[in-house]
Amino acid sequence: MRKSSEKHWNKVYRKNAVDGLGWYEESPAMSLKLITRSNIARNDSILDIGCGASTLIDHLLDAGYSNITATDISRAAIKKLKERLGESDASRVSWIVDNVANPTILRELKDIAFWHDRAVLHFLTAEQDRREYLSTLRQVVKTGGFVMIAAFSLAGAKKCSGLRIRNYDEKMLAEFLGSDFKLLEHFDYLYIMPSGDERPYVYTLFQRIS
Image 1 (cartoon, helix red, strand yellow):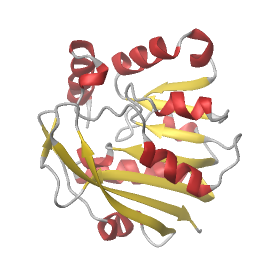
Image 2 (spheres, rainbow, N blue to C red):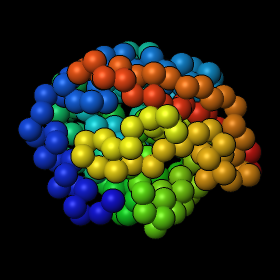
Image 3 (tube, one colour):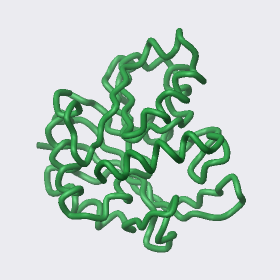
Image 4 (cartoon, one colour):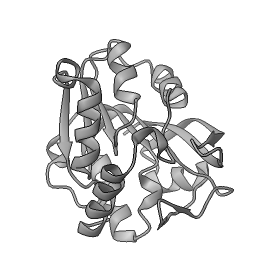
C-alpha cells in the first residue's frame, strides 16, 4: 500500500461525505467493547491505525482516555476528523500521517498499550506490506499490551472501496501475529453499511505475552 494508496484514500475522503462511506459507524460499539475488555488505564497509550474520519476518537475522548495517537495514510481523512472534533478536542490527540505498510514516523513510537485496527490489515494483500505492518506492530506494542484487529471474515466481501482485500478468520490472524501474542477473544460481527448492505467481519483481541 504505497503512493497509489495515498492518492486513492485522499480521493475517497475528499469526494464523499464521511457518514456515507461503507465503513462508517455512528457508534464503534465493538471496538469500544474490546478496549474496555482490555482494562487499560485511561492514561495508557492507544494507537488507532487507519483512523480515517471515524467516530472512535470522539468516543475515547468522551470516555476519558487521554493518551491517544491517531494515524492514517490520508491527510484528507485526518483533516475531516480534526474538523469534526473541533480545535479543543483535536488538540488532545497526537496526529500522524503515515503508511503502516511503509512507515517513516510510526516506528518512533514506543510502549503502545492498545493497537486498534478496524479494517486496515485486510487491505494489505502484498506480503511485503503485511511484513512491514507486523514489524511496525511488534516494534511499538509493549509486552502486556493489546492488539485489536477487525477484518473482513472469510464469509465477507472480496473487495472494498474498489480495492481487493484479504479475508481472515481468528486462526489466520493468530498465525500472522505469531506466538508472542495470545488470542483473548474473537467473534463474528455483521456490520450493516450506510447503504444497507451487509459486511461480515471477524473481531479479535490479542495480548502480547513476550
